[in-house]
Image 1 (tube, rainbow, N blue to C red):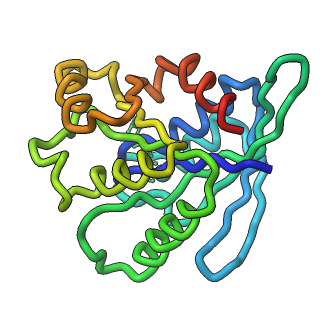
Image 2: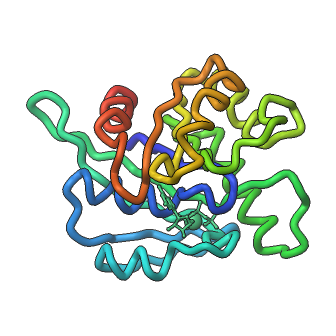
Length: 200
Ligand SMILES: Nc1nc2c(ncn2[C@@H]2O[C@H](COP(=O)(O)OP(=O)(O)OP(=O)(O)O)[C@@H](O)[C@H]2O)c(=O)[nH]1
Ligand SMILES: [Mg+2]
């Protein structure tokens, strides 16, 4: 089964996107598989509302391990199953918490084997050094473009300051396909779905 991975900085909206995109594809409740760095797997069945309440949040590094769902995508006359995996956010600093460092390493490990990469960027937080090599978003971009199975999602477009940052994002990452989305309000999901369908 092909796997799509959702990556980005902490708090960029990865978990909310994953859950609302699953809902957009017709999921009524969530069967989530959690995979920790040391190989422990657990499964939980959650309503979408409970999943959002428990798994999303404003605190940095709410997600600390891989969280996967198997979803269906109608393609032509058939339906294709694929795995959508939310990850521990990555930042430039070496984090003081060992669990978070291991979570980040787990994200990077999966990145190499994932079939399609969805890179979320918080549009309210586009920095002037976005295109420099010291920026983790640049690292993701560079890797993703080289893999040729990658899109960048400019998230939180519903927020005031976000729209003004879209041109900045597109010019900082000129080789990326950038789709403005709102993980909160499902904006841009039709386009994301089309890209996912082409890559699973
Ligand atoms: N307004 C708005 N808020 C959003 C959007 N996407 C996410 N958020 C909010 O941003 C915060 C972080 O969202 P999460 O989905 O938990 O972010 P994450 O990238 O999974 O964060 P970590 O797990 O900590 O790495 C939450 O308070 C969300 O409600 C969006 O499109 N619009
Ligand atoms: Mg998260």
